[in-house]
Image 1 (spheres, rainbow, N blue to C red):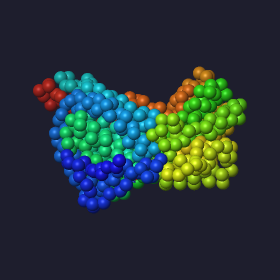
Image 2: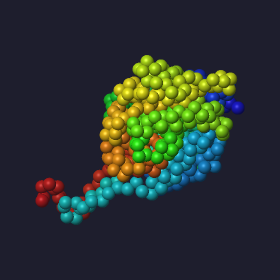
Image 3: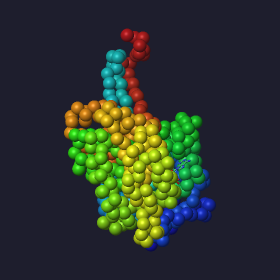
Image 4: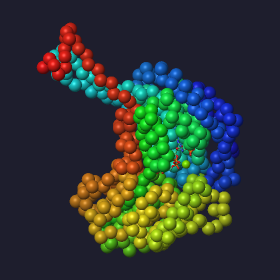
Length: 494
Ligand code: NAP
Ligand code: MG
C-alpha cells in the first residue's frame, strides 16, 4: 500500500510547487513502496515560515499549561496509534519492530513530560539591592523554530525538539530526513488531531540543500534545532551564525564501552550486543568500541563473536528478527568502505565483514554484524563514526589506559563501564569526557526526562531531553519593579 504524502503549510496539506516528488522505499524490501513525497524548495520554506510567524502572534499568548494540555492529548493519541506508527517506521527505515515501538514510546514519554513542563517553566524571584523594589525573571518564547532531523529515530528525535518548542510557545517549521518522511507526517497528523492550532506546525518535505539550507538561512527563523552528521552540522552552524541565530546541534559519536576484569562478563556481553548491533549500529549512541581489560580480553571476544554470528538479521517486520538492514545503499556503502579501511589498517576481522548471504537478502541493504579485534586507538576504525553494524575491540592494560582510550576521540556523546569496583565506577563518572555515562549498562538507553547530549564535537553545548531543553527554547526576561515612588539608582544609591 503506497500513499501520496504532502507538505502541511499554513493549515493546508499541499504538494510542492515544483510538481515533483520522490519515492520512499523499504530498505528491507525495495519492491515495497511506502509512498511519494513532495520535492519542495525555497518557495515552500518561505510559505511555511510566514505561516509559523503569523501563528506565533496568538500561540505565544496561550497559557503554557493550556499548551501543555494539548501535548497531553498528543501522548494519548500516540499511545492509541503506537502499533501503526511502529510498523510504518520499520517499513521506512528498517529497524526491528521492538525498537520502533520503543522509539514511539520515547515520543509518548516526551509528550507527557512536555505536558507537565507547561505547569513549570519556572522563573526566579530575587531580592533587590534597593528598598521597595522587586526583581523577577521569567521565560518567554523565542518565535519560529526550525527543526531538522535524521532518519535513525524518526519519531523520538522530532518529538524531543518539537514538543518543548511548542510548550514554550514557539511555532515550528519541520524538515524531516528524506529517508523517513512517513513517520514525520504521522507526527504532524497527531499534533493536529490533538488540537494544535494550524500554523503552529508546518512540515516541508525535500532534500537537505533545497529545504534544510533555506530554513537555516531564513531571517524569520529565530531558533534552530538540528540532529545529524557533523559535516552538515558545521555548515549549518556557520550559516546560522551570520544572523546570530540560536542553534542546538546534536552530531556524531564514537562511543566506547569499557569492560574491566572485575565486571560481570555475561551482563557486559548482552550490553555490547545490544549497544553495537541494535538499530543496525545506526544510533548516535551506538557502542562502536569495546575497550577490554587484557585479563578478560580473549574470553570476552570469544563470547562476543559466538553470539554476534548468531544474531538473526532480516526484515524488521518479522518479530523474530534481531537486526534489520542499513537504512539505504549509501549507508551500506559507508560500512563497506570502513571494513576495507579496517583491513588495510591491520585490524583483524573476526565476525561478519560482508553482506548477508541468501536470497531473502537480495531486495534489501543488509550487512552482517561485524567485529574487528587488534584495533589500536588511533586507527580510523577507532576514531571515525561509521553508523553501521561494525564493532572495534581495543585491548588495554588497566583502568587508566581504558579511560584514556575512551576519551581519545573528537566526540563525547555516550560511554559505559562494566565494573563491580566502586572506586572504578566513581572515577569513571568523573573522568569520562562524555555527556552520558552508563554504569553496568550499554551506551544506549536514554530516558526522555533526562538531559541528552554530548561534550566536545558531538554538539555545541546544548542538551535535549529533560528540563534543559526548555531553557534552549526560551528567552529569559528580567523585570525590575520599583514601588518606592522615587528614582532609585542601582550601584549609586548604596
Ligand atoms: P545528515 O545527513 O546530516 O542529515 C540530517 C538532516 O539534515 C536530514 O534531515 C538532512 O536532510 C538534513 N540536511 C542535509 N544537508 C543539509 C543542509 N545542507 N542544510 C540543512 N539540513 C541538511 O545525517 P543523517 O545521515 O540523516 O543521520 C546520521 C547522522 O546523525 C550521524 O552522524 C549521527 O551520529 C547523527 N545523529 C546524532 C544524534 C545525536 O543526538 N547526537 C542522533 C541521531 C543521529 P536529507 O535527509 O534530505 O539529506
Ligand atoms: Mg542523510
